[in-house]
Length: 73
Image 1 (cartoon, rainbow, N blue to C red):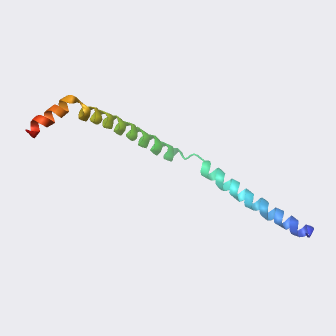
Image 2: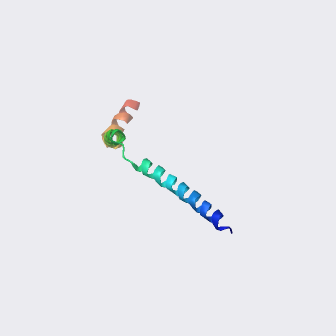
Image 3: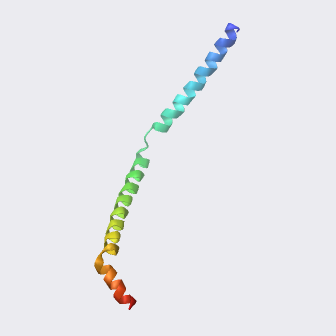
């Protein structure tokens, strides 16, 4: 191969790699506002999980089944 062609290809490859690294680093940058939204969402999810656990416990209790059977009569 021609040495000038290899040199040009190396420069092009270096520029492409630099752009990829820059894009990666920009994507990794932590946005404080997005982090707050994430914390709020996680808190809501935890609250909803607790409510679901309570509802599951209520529904699976024997008294609930008994009341359901009495109401069905």
